[in-house]
Length: 360
Ligand SMILES: Nc1ncnc2c1ncn2[C@@H]1O[C@H](COP(=O)(O)OP(=O)(O)OP(=O)(O)O)[C@@H](O)[C@H]1O
Image (cartoon, rainbow, N blue to C red; front, top):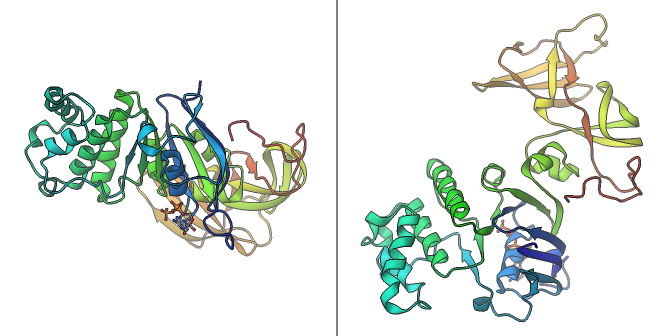
């Protein structure tokens, strides 16, 4: 059974504007960490707040362990919420902050349980400190210990790492992920940081303007983006028009492999690392060949901008594929172009409008 199931969740704050969240559906398995990813204002926090019970939905259903939570107030949903600003009590010690969240436990048991939780988040030695005596990452771990103290069945994390500097953010999110995994907690992380989503989450949902455009594992979404928005929001993408006949398409780059098979006009996504540069030969030398406009050495790879037919392609190669700026080169795909969903597009073997993968 799914731990959490959301069906057709919808919220409109203002009748004169489009809904903040429109017909959002997804599932979360026990112990799974789902990332809700999308640009500012796309409806991530509103979705989280509806699950927690802070914002009433206008439509749709939320099931926890198969039971609807519609009639339950936030405190009876057994959902923990970790906020961006940690919301610790500044005048209480670390230990007392956690003890405060244990009010449902019998008084003599509280201190030991709080110490167990602080040990779990690696802060036993800091129990007598006050929040202002801790680093941002340590404060975040206290907030997590306090949320775990309430023994929630699900934890919702709203941009919990955004106040930390880059180095601390990376180590804190690795710590928090392993804590959640140790505790076998299901969690939803809201973020607009794609690197955070990729490294922290088991599955992702990419939101755009109130709707969920695609769900799947990070690999599925990265390698098979469904729409141009997803292709460009998660990673970088070269978008290319073409005319498809089955598994190939005629494009500015010549005839290239595509997937899935389709016919007619298509919009394709090619990741920069799925393109490569080759020396020009008589066979691949058009009148006005692709030309390198910039070359950036990035240690383990090289990033090129290549101008061809009045547009720019982004290409990532390994450092051995070395051409100086200004060179004329051949531009070749190393993987099939991914056919993106557009209105009216029909994949071979599927009826019009059918998503090409069942995960999203
Ligand atoms: N209480 C509210 N009253 C009116 N409009 C709201 C309210 N809360 C959110 N909105 C609007 O709903 C839309 C979605 O907001 P939401 O906070 O869910 O986006 P978000 O994806 O979490 O953004 P961010 O990444 O900036 O936090 C926005 O247009 C926002 O202005």
